[in-house]
Length: 365
Image 1 (cartoon, one colour):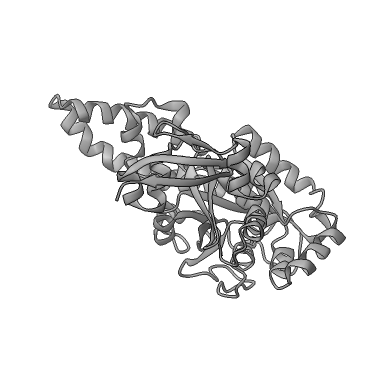
Image 2 (cartoon, rainbow, N blue to C red):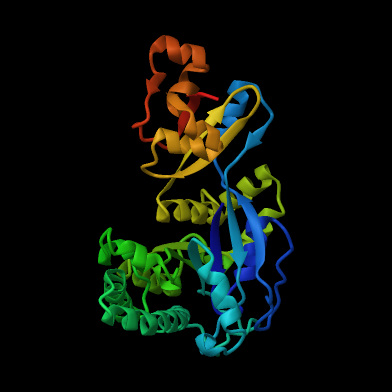
């Protein structure tokens, strides 16, 4: 399952956002640093309006959405890479996620303590990024010390890895997230990924604002957006407090509340969509009288590998895939009608699955 870590300085709204994400009160939220000690973990369903539409057409009450695991990691502070605050314990937690959501405080509130004494989104971002980069640098230098000795003996693998490690060390000096695809070729990539560095993970900056700024943002969010754009990252504006309130409402009430605020979608919905975009993910569907099920794969996945997401036997015994585009199915109302109109087609092992494909796999047992 996809894992996303929520990080940031203390008192920026991470745990409040986590509560809203998971619709629980599991994450303790309070007005003092290090409120979160152990990382809270919650599995969140990915919103997908297509599932209910398909369920009605297929006459089933069973809907199984795809999901993301969110990890609420304790607030980092300056010096965390050297053990300050709660230090390396939490840096280890960040290494284990697939993507990072960095929550940035973009609101003024004299009743909520800021760890640095003032609200400055860019300083906050750079504090977090510097600590992650310093911790990564320590990992690179430790590995480099060993590999350099082996490289001197003429070992080809060590020579190749040494080159990559030196390049990573150079990139980490900038304390900004690194897009590995921009800096390393296919031969170098295994070495670049070996240490699972935090600064090589995709990142979304979540600008946490007050209720009044949810629609248009503010001067703080503009700073975050400019920074993210400059560094090739995504930004989502959220009011964690509003999202927590929305989580306690029914679906219809939540829609009414959003309408009153003048926004179309919840910030969490936008954030999850951004995670999918960031990680280059898409959803294909299986639908019938038994259930409607969403499945997540990386864009570019071929049919046999997509079948393997459902069950390894499907991939091993793959014969073909029956593909029905979602829009055609909704328009025509049934698989039979889609087959009669010729919109359902048979695809082989080289077919690349598309977002919204309704798929029926044929395979040998």
